[in-house]
Image (cartoon, rainbow, N blue to C red):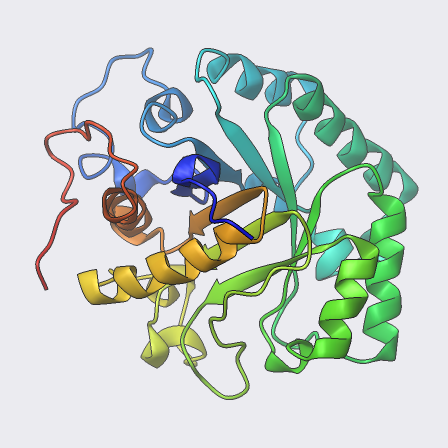
Length: 282
């Protein structure tokens, strides 16, 4: 199969609204009309919506998102599925399923829906019951391009990958700290949508007893590490119609600078803001 060009690779951050980004990612001084989504979408061709994991926003909010990126040619959102699908199935109601499908439908109608990421916790191991759960999720969200993110290495075997291919559900490649039985980074694809999610390699604080969200994702990739990720992305892009590369190491804007530098390394260059710390030699 011939290699595809980098035009099918979309690189961006997970989320856009973090208080600790002010003066680091966002300008130190902003006007009353400053909007983080409008600002970030100027520099990246994709952003992962992650607020949807915690709650399903109202229609008005979703339509505002669409309006804010309307003039961004080729821009696409990815959407992190509501936690009731992945982490807490006991709270998932019929109304939740209906509301989440409506959210995705609005994005799809505006032609800005790229993929729906269903991210499972480390405790979600590969077994018969959990495979049945994937089928149930597929039934609930059958109209959309689904991608499953697993954290446990038990999901990395040929039979499971064939199972996902038959479901037409993508496999999210994960860059995360190599601890215990964590899933290693490999250029795996099981559908026409490729997804690579980079969480940083903060091994010390990944499962530490005092680790909170900020400590866990306080990590800046080196140039050498980003070159490794770029090679994995290149291999995945050959086998997919579209590849999303999302950085989730959000603490103090690390994900922004890593996404920008990876873009540079992959030839997807943009005029970054002058205060961003993008390039590095280490």
